[in-house]
Image (cartoon, rainbow, N blue to C red; front, top):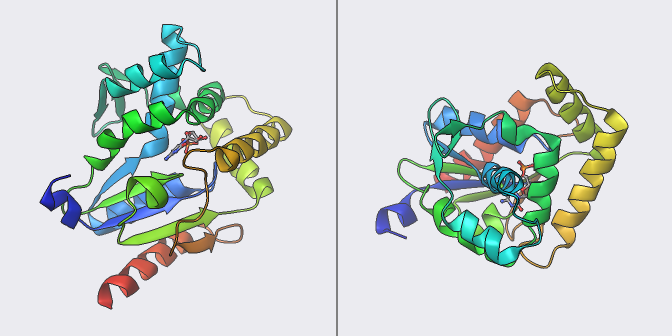
Length: 225
Ligand code: C5P
């Protein structure tokens, strides 16, 4: 990590599936004029590449090699994998499920570390995921753990998918989300849990604007001290 990267301020936002952390992170980054890292998208891109390339989801060495050479580009218009815009393709529930399975593999996680840390540059970075504050950026300026009840997260995800024209069933989504929570929080490597010193925000009864405002308040309070 270069000196400049170590100095760049960083807000780490971790939380379970569909807690709204992606949207919140994007809005916080926009408000501060910083870059945004959606680390879940990297796991989803690995999963998509594995599914397309016929790599088994338990082939740890094969998946780590794939992740280490992932042809990713964070363009202005979206996320590119080998020159193809995969912004929509990686949002498919099957890709999300596969991402959650391969994310339990230590060698794959290690292979994605450098790519994530390289995103930390001035003027600052808002990084969202499961292990931003615990593993990838343990020296983050501010750590947020954003959560919400499983029912409200399933409803949000359902609404999002329907709006995007995907078909979705609320009961299936809830079951899948609970399975993913269980896998993400019980895995041996980088399990989902609030980082030491993280501020926990429960957004069950908050809308996006209120959640963004809370995160910005926490950050401004921290840097003023
Ligand atoms: O956040 P999102 O649902 O897009 O992430 C897809 C999957 O990638 C998650 O279910 C999780 O298992 C994994 N992931 C992870 N660590 C991160 C980000 C995502 O394990 N930092």
